[in-house]
Image (cartoon, rainbow, N blue to C red; front, side, top):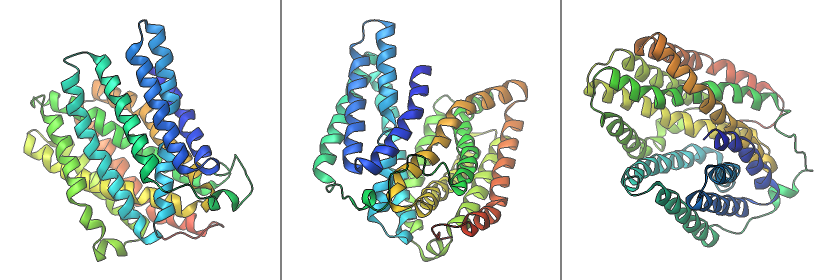
Length: 345
């Protein structure tokens, strides 16, 4: 697992570079096919070290598809429609996460090798579908500017978004890791976390029409982020004092609505900031926030739970979300004031 996690970090950067220079469609298909090969390797491995090598290959392929899949949405949508489009992507991923959990629980009773075999088959099926469904890559985003592999890393606005995004991603990863332990600490049934995640996914799907309402569409991206962080803070605050399942469900409704606004607008801000020819690289760099969060969130969540307990954990997380809400106007001024591409603020 550690080898896999480390390998995913260069995977995302590689995906961003390929998306801008090799093409979105071909990069997505390459990543999915590579994942299928890595998963098949693990399924067939007869020794630990063979499985480790398969896990490293899977990690190197695992994040390749993300930057091009996010960039292609920006390629085919107008700026005002991107929050809705990214919201649909988030809803699809949430629904898939619930389905994947059910599938994993069912397959694990047979043999874990089957889990990797099914994953490999699903990756190949997805690659085949996209080979026919996605239009042929166009070259305008590759030919509009000279190649610069460091592009994005030299943009202080993107690095500022990366720093803020890392705090945000850490909050969500802490939520995913700390909530099950909090439920157990407060004597809730073991099935409660599955119920809460299913409710969260249903909210992300059912609330999609809100993204297209006039009031929400009139929100600037940073204003929507501010509201999203306030909803997240409220949900985390309720987690701090909840002692029964209905209250935890109320908290899940709030942080899920916050998630709806935050993820869709974050990608919108990054794609608006990026030059057309470098969207893949910008999204890849911003996406590193989740890799960093996946590394540090387990340490933060477990240490705080072990030494302070659930209530301080969620109070600290809620305060961090309030901090992120408070800095959105300043963040907007710093990013839109800097030279470069104008943003829909």
